[in-house]
Length: 303
Image 1 (cartoon, rainbow, N blue to C red):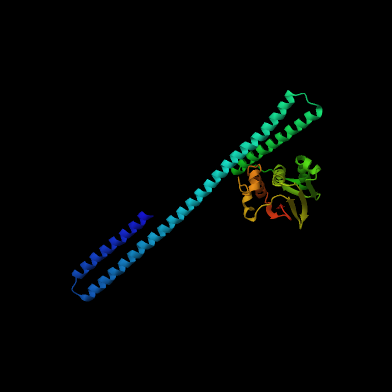
Image 2 (tube, one colour):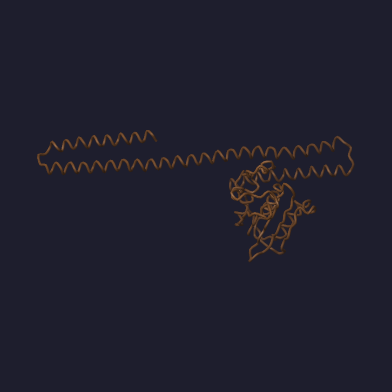
């Protein structure tokens, strides 16, 4: 930039010198005062035009240069943020993978080394199965996020009962929470929708797991599926820590995790809500977040 400005100054000076020499030549080449004045005025006009042209072109070039610098800095900042998020993601995934593997290994080793009664064996096997299911869901999410990034996610839409899909998903994956009254649901019967049943089930699972993860004091989640004005509405309400207004849009970005201190202490990879938003977009489902009362969040999906 400094070099360009200095070049512009030198160019203006050089132009002034050339015009001055031409003025002197014009003064010497004619004895008619009127002609001399006319030539000098014409040369002065050309001088001003050249100065305006140089300054104008220089200003436009400088503005483009500044705009380019701004865009490059903005892009670099975004790339640095993404790189940091990816690093955090890799660390989180590594931890998330090691934990269920280590827990399952310990439980199986206990079964092999000790003669345990039947009930204790069942308990350890049940725990190992839960850890395996957790590991399976984590791997599925990582693979699905990669497919979304590469636009390779296959959507197989069919006419299905959204009511049955929602209830079956809740009973299959969250039966313990339902038995303990941590999760309650109200599902209107007979609601149908054209969509991919596996992907829609993934949306429900990720939203419920997210609500469970950020319910620090006690878990109380309400799931409602109903028809309102010929639109199917799914609402998932929790009484967790909530999401600040300034972060409500960011939580759907890949690798993003809330900056709240409590949230940093929780396990997570930052891809669950990214997957939810991507699947909703593929199905033209609008998803919004609002505050629950007295605390917590409401995820509102309109089909």
